[in-house]
Amino acid sequence: AGAPGQGKTTLALGMAATVTIGGRWPDGSPSTAGNVLIWSGEDDPADTLLPRLLAAGADRAKCFFIEGARRDGEVVPFDPARDLRQLLAAIEQIGGINLLVIDPVVSAVAGDSHKNTEVRRALQPLVDLAAACDCAVLGITHFAKGGQGTDPTQRVVGSVAFSAVARVVMVAAKVKGDGETKDARILARTKSNIGPDGGGFHYFLEQSEPLPGIHASHIAWGKAVDGTARELLTDPEESDDVDGESSARDEAVEFLLELLQDGSAPSKHVEAEAKAAGIAWI
Image 1 (spheres, rainbow, N blue to C red):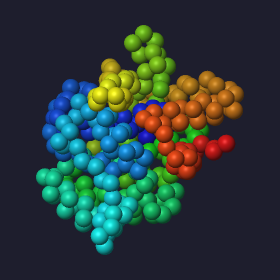
Image 2: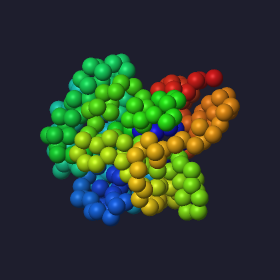
Image 3: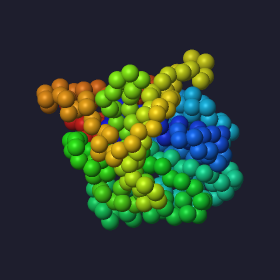
Image 4: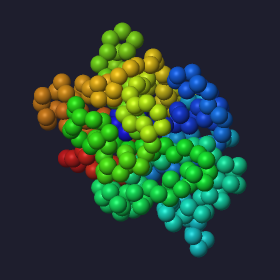
């Protein structure tokens, strides 16, 4: 989770790339090589997701995408609760997966994403799928507006069930720094049911040309940092700006830069994403 413009999708695809090649995580520990499956309601696989995966060094043969489900001979939008059996069959056909990425995770909820019971019910098929496939599920989401200085786990947009169901919650934000950490961002662990809380890593967004004529962003990891997520993620670009109108405008600019960094999008899609991110259409 994080505010717009922090490279959350790029982070997730960087992790997916690490899985495909059995690479090393930022702390130096090795990853087991395996297939990754990506379901994105925001980005096109061909012109956005795959280039970013390749920029991160992914094995193209181990990258798969959910583009819909087949029902009565027609391709329809994927629904995890309804299409789980079809998805499990597809996963078995490709030889299993080690990671499923969902961007944004709120798209898995057909009902009210602010209601605890509806969110838990909607996420349960994904929990069941992870158990059946022995894979990790990584969901991407936004921060709700405001709440600087509070527990970052409480700032995840929508129902608290999103954070409660997750075994680990990681948050991304810009931080103040100097020298090599100037304009750096930090990915920090704010909740963990399977290990210690706190700590994280600096990261930077860089550009490359993985395919001729196609530019894509990728993650460059920095040094490890200690402390709680609340201490590490100060959101300096927001807290230092006392002009509310200017702050809201800057947030909208960052949101648009992230959403449109790989090309244009229909205005209705932009408006829907802005609403989900808590940004006024005006």
